Structure formats: structure tokens, C-alpha cells
Image (tube, rainbow, N blue to C red; front, top):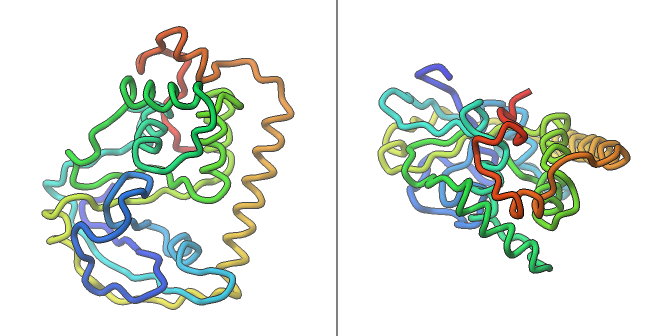
Length: 230
């Protein structure tokens, strides 16, 4: 990542002054300002089937920031899962899923609030379903990793600290037309679903979450996929 970056926030409104500690706590990485380096991805996130949106543009100097890069080889897919299950609201339908959530937090969790900025995949639409399926012991960690990579999931940049908010400079906005970007968003989600179905058709020879719990698997286990980036 370059020291000075341009980022985009997809929204239903123009956000010329991002506000620290404003937003939903149940987002992927907790409370923060969620952006992307891709303007097209931000436009997809901004629209619905009924209305246009806005891709708000900012520049940010990342010098001196403490950055957590969840997609780097330093972390496994279960680090990403642990952060996700700690903050997002999942459907916990079984005792296995309940134990799985706590095991992931205890063994793979990361204190995201210790960082100024986080980069990592966004669990939107069908990708959230994949994470939920893994938590409920339906797919293996290898299948989860394949689905996340092959589905071309967008990477998000999340601003966490008050210090980082002070370094954001608003540069303007572009309109995201629903006629274009809702179609693209739906196409990306449809492609992800098709990829997931193809993965499910293959024999599941790998670790389910219940295997991970029973085997007391840790973060340095070579069987856990690293580096979510394609």
C-alpha cells in the first residue's frame, strides 16, 4: 500500500465529513468508516435496486498508521473468520456453532481496536453465507478459502482510530447509477453463488470447524489456508 492513498466510501448520501464512532457496531470489523480503493466497488456498495448512490472520494496519508492487513500471509482465513464472528450477527442454530464462535475468538481473534486502519475482505451478500456455513459445520476451511478467493470478493479499508479520521481529506464524489451498478453488484453475487455451488459439488476432504475444535488446532497449523489475496 502506498503511503498516500485514494479511497472511496459508497453511501446513499454525500459524506464530506466522516465522523469518528458513528455507524453500526455490527459491521465486519466493528465500528469504523468502511471504504475501498476501487471506485467501482464503492459504487456497487452504494446502490440498491430502487435508488442511486454516491461514491465519496478521499485522500489519506497512511504514514505513521498502525495497519492490520488481514489478507497478508501473516494471517490465516480463520483470523478473518474470528474477527467476523466477534462483530457480525450470525445465526447460531446449534451447539456446534456456539462452540465454534467462541473457539475462533479465543484461538484466532485479533483486537482490531488496537489498529488505526484495517484492510481485509468484505463479507457481503453470499460471502456472509459462506462464513455462516463454515461456522455451522457445513463446509470445510479449505472450501471456505476457495469460495472467498474464487468469488472475487472486494477488499475493504476500514478506518478505526480518531487519529486516522483526522487525516482524511474529502475530495468530492461521483454518482453511482443504480441501472449500471446494481446490475454489476448482482452479477458479482450470482458469480459467487455459482462458484460456491461448484465447490460444494467436490468431495469435502478437509477440516470442518468441529475437527478444528476437537483437534485443538492453532493458528500456526499448516493445514489452515493463509493469505486470502488472489
